[in-house]
Amino acid sequence: MSVHLHTQRADPAPPPHRPGRRRSRPTSRLWSQLDLKAAPYFLISPYFVLFAIFGLFPLVFTLWVSLQDYGLAGGDATFTGLENYSKLLADADFWNAVVNTVGIFVLATVPQLVLALLLANALNKRLRGRLFFRLGVLLPLVTSVVAVAIVFTQLYGRDFGLFNWLLGHVGVDHNIDWQSSKWSSWTAIATMVDWRWTGYNAIIYLAGMQTIPRDLYEAASIDGASPRKQFWSITLPMIRPTIIFTVFVSTIGGLTLFAEPVMFASNRMDGGTTGQFQTIAMYIVEQGFRNFDYGYAAAAAWLLFLLILLGVGINYTFVRRIGGSR
Image 1 (spheres, rainbow, N blue to C red):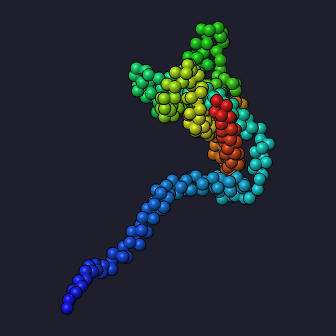
Image 2: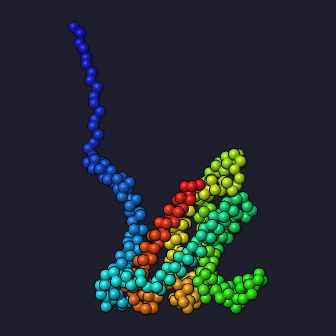
């Protein structure tokens, strides 16, 4: 008789019950989901909160004010609908300010961006003391706009200005009164803007050029492309997003130009005796805080906003076609 002994492996003892452990898994999963999905919105929310307070609310409030006969104190506001806009569109002084703003914008922005491109392309080369030159182009930006305007006003002085003195040495036998006519005053203000912002745009273009792989230039050199051909075929198409950004910023800044022409007019808002260089921003301040017609000034501000959108759209379309054709 044989006895068979069957040994059975004992199962391991179950781990002790820990009630808090199971409840922590859903909690940790919830925190993980919040970290992945909610944290980005939380981190960018301060910008949108500040924009809603200082950007969106003033924009909506200005639209509401523009539909009323609104005094500066706000106590005698009466709803007038689109009356302010209809008067504004028939106001010759407003259209004079529009022409001045667009004229100064064109004279200042086009040379500014072209010079910035050329300057950035030069700073992108191998030069001795490149850091010194790159920092030097930013010096006009850190200079006070008031100081810049005062210095340029003296340079463009009619009787003792440096520019009239230089023009006298090249055959111009009479002193130019730079503030008396549109084109001369536009030119003077445009040079202030260009001197101040050309270096800023050049540094932005230089940052875009630094991201272009050097292999592209080496391959183009092997294929026999000249530096000029490389600039048009490689550099410009590769930094097209940067160019679009600078065009946007320059359009907004140029159409809202205020400080330079005000200082050029000795802190006056009329832009000269006949308003020859009064910008839309100066016109808005004059109507709102000199004539105390806040509703009329708000309507002008909204038309300026629409003009900026139109200018940005036109420039964006133009720059995209230029970049695509290259």
